Image (cartoon, rainbow over all chains, first blue to last red; front, side):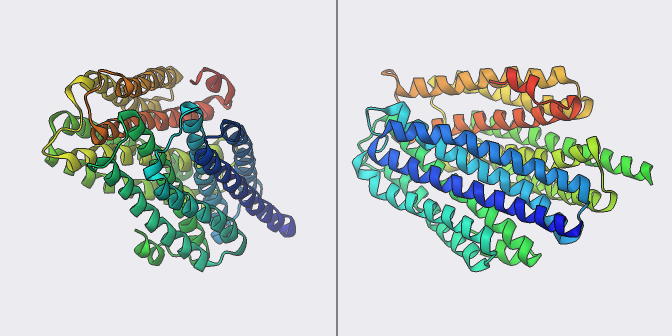
Length: 220
Length: 220
């Protein structure tokens, strides 16, 4: 019986990793769609989000079954409850990749991003992708140096997000009102994506160390 | 023993109601701060958000204790797990009220909203307030007609949110890039607020009826 229980917990962790992998693939495609105003790719991202929602539902149901049938306590209980939280964050990250793809489709054949702001978005996208890949690794390895790498990346994401707003407010900015809104929203999607990544990283860190505080203190 | 258990569940529900009340008060003040560019009120909202986070943490810890000590099953288990979900949505609603207040503080002494768009935001704010108050009532009464009222209000919120973007993109729009971004973000905060309200309403509906589908079908 205990063996089956440990196997259930391992399956739950595998499913979380699966969602993180799907989110990574979705973001990768959304970024490429944004870069090249590719509506077909954007459509893929939008369609793939249903799969993420499906796996999230599965992992939630499995977690609730484990709570009902196994009555886990102590660190096992924290893990199962943590799963219910992490799956929400991961699912939201999938939504945010979809939001980026929806912007691409909405503006087509025009580009969402004016040329001048593209370097900032390339860096934002690279950091978010790094965070998504790091989450897969973190869920697999529970190595807290990976969790810290996610925090560091998020700090830079926040700086870039702020710089997008500065660029929009500057005298040199050429975008009209609608373009400016698109750019601001896209930036916010990337910023929220990273933020949810930090939530998952903090949760894993807590599960490993049993302590919120040290990790919280280094959070931006 | 069972009596104590039922009391614990009632306390958890009371704490959820408490958060919903705090969120209602926060939104009320944030809306007033937005209307009158009142930084003192905005500051209150920002400070009060810590209280919401604190009560959320309390209800989560209590829920985890109940899972550990009582091993609830069936509908009691669904309720406790649902609580962990609803508390996240309610806490996010508090964050969104805070985001509105932060916009007010950031732009002071200027107004966030140009005169032309204020009627739309008055309606948005009134609907979000209605949703917040309805959540308090729904958590208290479990009356699904209240849940449906929240859905209907959210549909109108989505229409207004879309109309804000249309106004920004129209020829008549006078706002510069930075103003347009503020208006779009404020609108998104109100839209997300309503969306989280719907998440809670759906969860309560599920707990009462045991069925996602009928409610899902009427969701926008």
